[in-house]
Length: 156
Image (cartoon, rainbow, N blue to C red; front, side):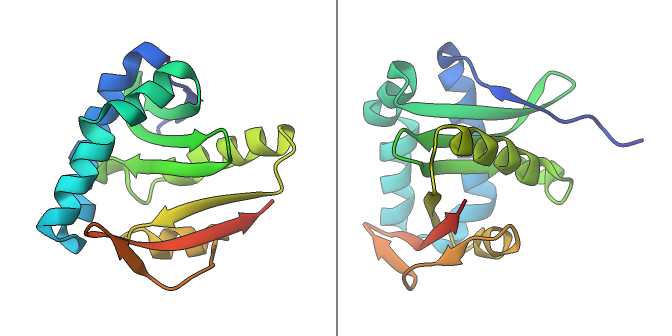
């Protein structure tokens, strides 16, 4: 029996739960492609840094969560300028439609806002998934402070 995936906006006061999921998935799947500097940069900017937390709490970054039986299994955050900051799904839920459903919901919301495109910086681990759902590279793979990524865009 297929499990029902519910996608909804995560309450701003649940930011610690969101960050814990991001860090867990990052360590399991993404970190292997990063230098020590990149791992530390990611940790400082997204997990323990106040800037990302403050953007969520102030509503400048919206986080959508994928829930199965009320358990948070995936997240996707998007800024007010239509840039996806984080998209992470717990490993045991990969290839089960969770990431796709998160993107379907967010893209629907962006179209309502009048957005014509969405951008993101894809980790090496996620590039194939993003290509599969229609994103295209806009630059070659690069790095910033040890964070390796490919800039991508999806026309809506």
